[in-house]
Length: 102
Image (cartoon, rainbow, N blue to C red; front, side):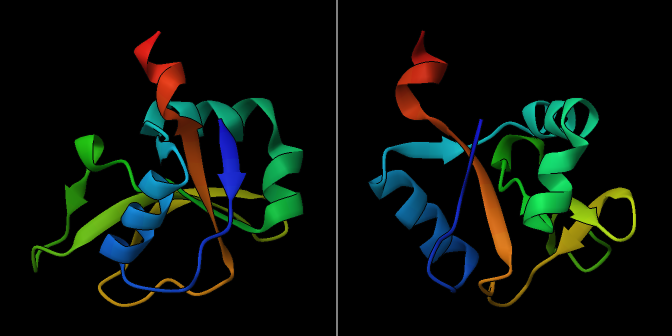
């Protein structure tokens, strides 16, 4: 699992950039493992999100909710609903495409 920054934008634009850079969104279980095994990474990065579409949850309005890790005086695991743009506060959890193929 790696953490990368992307240009601020809508979810589709972020996913396209992730793909063009040779990555896919990290599966949610990978991100959960990162949060459990390496809490210092959350503290260092502040906001980490997985745009894992295979484990996507929808809110009552049908908007996507993504798994996120956040540091707020301690580790915080939750869901974030992003109907608009992602700003440059977010780090995106990704894995290299070839690592999932092996």
